[in-house]
Length: 61
Ligand SMILES: [Zn+2]
View 1 (cartoon, protein in one colour):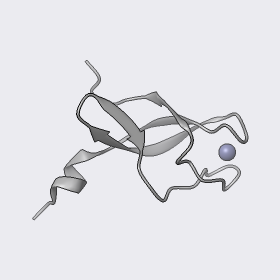
View 2 (cartoon, protein in one colour):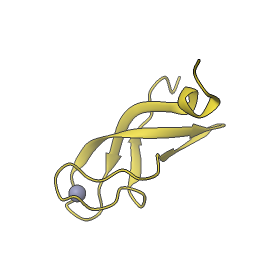
View 3 (cartoon, protein in one colour):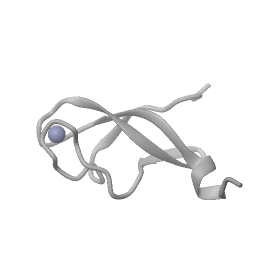
View 4 (cartoon, protein in one colour):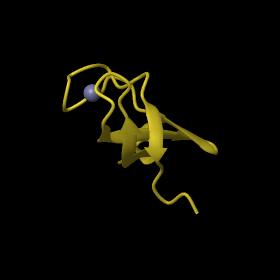
């Protein structure tokens, strides 16, 4: 059984401010806006992505 938390997680893109690359990230969709899901790290520089800006939100139409 899926939880409500899992239902909010979608794969999108985030912009890492440390290495300035756009990297894939799991996004936590809350209402009309998205945040990078907690606890993720940039696959390039291993910095926390919690401060990264969301670039692409899936099913944003
Ligand atoms: Zn990075």
